[in-house]
Length: 375
Image (cartoon, rainbow, N blue to C red; front, side, top):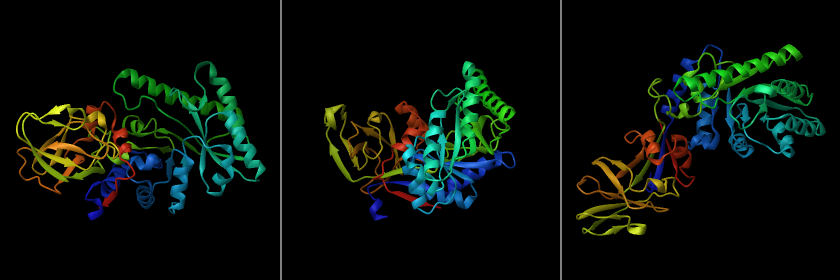
């Protein structure tokens, strides 16, 4: 544990196992589980999480880019891997060699991927993305684009050098409350199904794998959005279920007290002197800063958890360290453990304070912070 005495992230594999099983119980029989492990599994460590998911019986994994996929393959992960983002066509030979599945977002990309696959005498496994309302990636198919979208999808799946294994869309408002969000989401699901029905009617082609439910869809739109496969991300790591599934947060961001100093009243603390002590103050220096993922915008706006009680963060958060007020916390001494978020300090509350979402705080925990796996 000596190497982690600065700052570390404790990852509970037991919590991820619990969350996986809780999500599985909500799904109709036969629905496959795609674990989203992009962004280093939301900061939890893509290799460790992928190995656990393979052990638990997940059928698929998803990453954002080729580099993330190759990290998993190099680490011995053999599960099917879907690359959700763009890959330059020049890498098609590598995609085929490594048995990776590439997302296709428009007819032009389908043609480019197909041409390179043909040139090397191979076939590339792909999933077609439909833009049903996200306004990001995917074949346009809403409104006046419906007929052209269906035609373009048929053209893409007709290439002899592509293996059109799956089709998916992304639900833009499935995690939002209210009838407006529900109507919008059901509209997306309806449009998705309409496109697939028309593709089948005209061409006779049916996709083996249909999927549209990420975490919000899994929580709020089962069975409508279950289809052949679901794509939980944040739920897998213990957040976003509003207590409905009994999920357990898997990450605790921990640090220690490296220095303790006593300041008289009227002493400015950290850059800019934005905090000035009002009394004699016992101040701890913690070896964690924004280079570790503790956002600078949280300066002076939250408290750390300690075994002796809550310790308010004081002054501006620096790159590598910050200060916490330990006045009256006599049980907190040098090397005492301090929790930024985890079992005692809510990540959701910290995200609200920062004006962001839990995803950002999890993904912000930097590579220099060691991951320590428990359970």
